[in-house]
Image (cartoon, rainbow, N blue to C red; front, side, top):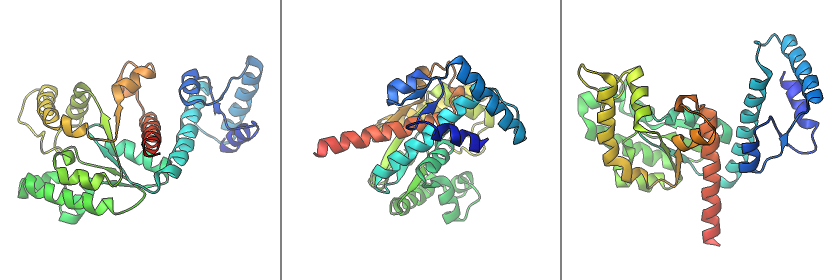
Length: 283
């Protein structure tokens, strides 16, 4: 199936997004391949035969086009942005549960970068099984000291996407380290964060671990308190990506319908705008 997809792309005079999403064409100035009923029928037949020959799982052709649109554009945009980053690191900041690690992995693949979760990095350096263990044994200050040292070390390494802990923004020294690269704030509504965390539990979230009670309500109230303390710090990020605004622009009613790839694409687009504006101001 990959070979057939490659032929479709190579047969065009210039790269095109295969699909029917006119919003992307308008927003990103990309040509879109619009198939008439005859060409679409022929392409559907060829793709169907290709799927059968490859023993792939059945799929709707429309879903295949959407996936191809997203994956092709993600890789293309990642390559384009990487060329203008000068090997700078990307630091993802945001509240716990905002998807920094999940999106960071997709983003790193698109850029050809390595991915690092700063919490995992701290666990390894401290010789602990989890952040929760560090909090329980030595306290938050001990963890924050290790976190700052981790960010210092990571800021010296090129070509990395770093998913930071939710509280990494509270220490000014951490911003000195993160500003060696580009900081991106993933802005997720509290309601969505509380639902995510309540669904998976708080065992790995020491600042949210609570006694018995309604998980959603307690998570929401604790997150509200944390965000109130951190919101000003998050606003220091070079780039802000609002998942609510992104979902609305894509016509999605539920944030859970946003894929990590769609969020990664938006991060790349916003980073590109940031770099462009920065270069314009310096000229």
